[in-house]
Amino acid sequence: MPISHLPRVTLAHAPTPLEVMSNLSTMLDGPNLYVKRDDCTGLAMGGNKARQLEYYFGEALQQSADTVIVTAAVQSNFVRQAAAAARKLGMDCEIQLEHRVAIKGLDYETSGNVLLDRLLGAKIHTYTGGDDEAGADAALEKIADNVIIRGGKPYVIHLSPGHPPLGALGYVDAAFELLDQAAERGITIDAVVLGSGSAATHAGFLSGVRYRKDPLKVVGVCVRRGADHQASRVFKLCQDVEKLANLPSTVTEEDVIVLDDYLGVGYGHSTPEMMEAIALAGRTEGLLLDPVYTGKVLAGLIGLVRDGTFVAGENVVFLHTGGTPALFGYRSLFDDM
Image (cartoon, rainbow, N blue to C red):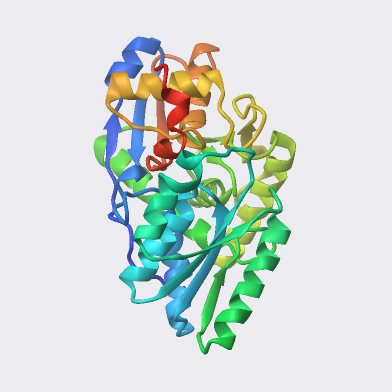
């Protein structure tokens, strides 16, 4: 493995299944659709963040940290799994929940991932500065200072640009895993459709497939910002991943495909296409998606089938990154479903 030189702990149940979505494929009358079940990684109800956290916690343990500090949105899957990983490894966890969207109410503020954060014993802080990566990261440092004053040894997980993208390395591994599964089954994958937000999953996966010299398309569906800003973010992160993992520079700007047609007005806001995708996934394949990430990603895949981008005979994989607990935070969206 090209990234065996970096510390890592095992948190995810891997390999995760690669399943055929035969009912949805038939209904859409297009390509052969598959789902890579990274909702099945274990660790406090699963999700893609388990893979990302393996390298962060590997470094945290190497530094003898006793408290992990992380920030993300109120209904964040990342902080939920970070809190679980910390408890599993005998560490404390302090999480900062960012009020990025103007959503209020008991469901959003106390149910779903927030409830799980509390059950896992995380100390919760709030950040009211909106969608502000730099400001949220600066606030983390203040939390870390207080941990030091109390005699602790903090490890801060920064998700904004400018910090080593350790989390993306988990999706270099995932890319290798998926390509190996496809080869074992004699499947040539034409495209993978995944969410593109912080870009860690997107950049890691793209770097992994290009390292293996596979020409498949990696299509990122924007869930946080528009395509222009996201494309440059993904490409820069790919460069950082390649350097960190000692990989050759194989990703080009042309390799970065991002779509913002399914973003709607922004992060965490519903769209009709997302609502349809969540219903179709549940009622054709028994899959539970979330409104923030996977619902919009599958909406993007469905749109690409309907507009003829993906056609009969092709093999297209939907990367299911989990997020199911957030459904409960957005319960009112589904009152009429």
